Length: 291
Picture 1: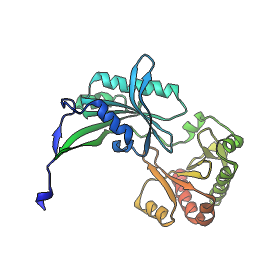
Picture 2: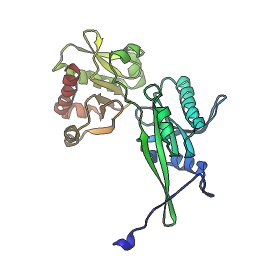
Picture 3: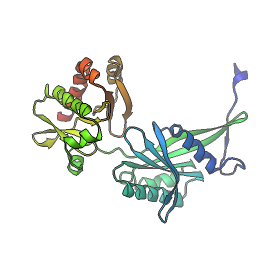
Picture 4: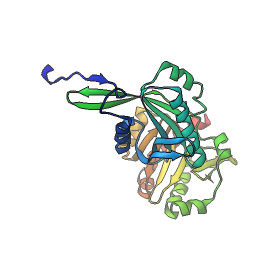
């Protein structure tokens, strides 16, 4: 079988006469998933920043609406690109505060000096560093993206975050989503009240949470859509939970490692036919929260 093996050859894009940063930018714009950051879509390319140049790529998560400000660099990381990456992130988050934002620097060589400098910001600036390697296999060129620095995980949506969340009311969500899907939040509340009768819905701008004795108590949150509702359950990812969800044939979205939540897309039928497994998952999150 060795005759089918072709040894890849590492090449430098910075010194290559044919492949440029624009070429890399176009590849990512056509298929943002190659970065390994999830199901992202392109929102803008070469986005003009007031008095600060152009942002290479603006990507967005299709479900959470989280935005990624991506700066590309061929060769090794340098101070200018570090500053530019953080500056673009800062501009975008101030212009569009309704979104969650994350800075991303993609470079061929993520130097140890860069990692040392960025470690000073990590925890304050949500920043991801991705090392990009260009490999030649026969007559073909491929890019391999490896995350070498992940953002520091923040706490879950809880009392502190809820205190800052903009409160709304039921009418807001019925207008934003639909009356029928907001009713699904009522049905899920009924399920949760089977093991904690004092729970109430708490309407916020970005989600519908829960309260207990007048205080935020978010072991689950709800995000009504036009035709369904997303249920977010705050429990650690595990094979056991994965199997529960798969066996129940629930429609799942990608697990959020950043927030530590399972995300399920539910319909009215799911709440009728799969109530038992939903109760079990919600109870596990409740016990972990109350524990």
